[in-house]
View (cartoon, protein in one colour):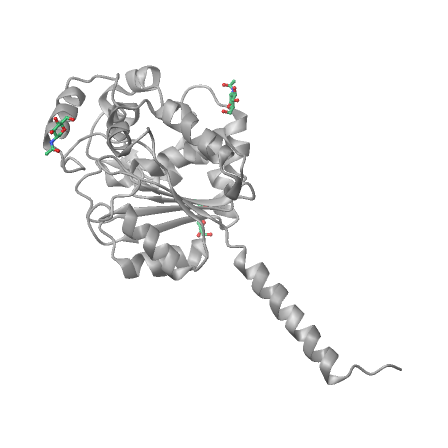
Length: 297
Ligand SMILES: *[C@@H]1O[C@H](CO)[C@@H](O)[C@H](O)[C@H]1NC(C)=O
Ligand SMILES: *[C@@H]1O[C@H](CO)[C@@H](O)[C@H](O)[C@H]1NC(C)=O
Ligand SMILES: *[C@@H]1O[C@H](CO)[C@@H](O)[C@H](O)[C@H]1NC(C)=O
């Protein structure tokens, strides 16, 4: 019988350690999608999130999506670029990035949250693992209490158009759901009714969404920007009024399982988180403990 000597044991250990550390280095990349009134890389918002993730997960590849050719176009796209075009543009960016081909985790801020879900439903390649919607308006909005973003000129303009009931030309109009005019919303709104399967049911949307591992929905308990804030958990105003809301579990989208969310909940893959703050005002500590440590590592 050949007994391993200490040198060969040592070498074996070293090569195992090398192999393991190498495997550990293959971190799943994270891709971020900014909200309206923000850009991919603003050092005060998404720029600091990128840095934080990179600090906590050394070696990770973090991409922050930019729509358009420069920061100004990126900023304006949040307001004015047709949602369906934004989704198609992002699908192309993901497919073209060699570092993402084995899959990625998606983090969306505000409208980035529902846009990521559209990507999951329409473009399953490369594969998305976890989808984290941070204050995403999964059932749209009805109201514009405080304009997100710094530029009041643009905000006033957006508010004026939305009050005119314009289901055209504006990104937010594409997830503007008027509970007093549900029929008009379902027929005219070009984005949300489609991804929420309000009209025709596209079986592919359900199959694709169910490919992700976890859907994480973060609601801001003191949100003054998203009306109703229940939308961040797939709730919305009951039809015909704008006071009482329904929850995801009470909706047909869930009970008839148009998107696979029922099955995901029953297999422990649907997660409801809260931050006891205003819209997107979570603390660094909260983000590390609830998002980075649990879903990005
Ligand atoms: C369903 O969605 C898939 C993915 O976006 C798309 O390719 C297909 O054309 C859609 N089918 C219908 C009937 O709209
Ligand atoms: C706000 O946006 C408008 C339109 O793009 C621009 O003309 C104006 O200079 C901006 N204001 C600020 C304070 O950035
Ligand atoms: C969703 O999942 C949770 C946790 O597994 C469970 O407690 C809850 O009953 C489920 N909700 C519904 C409506 O089935």
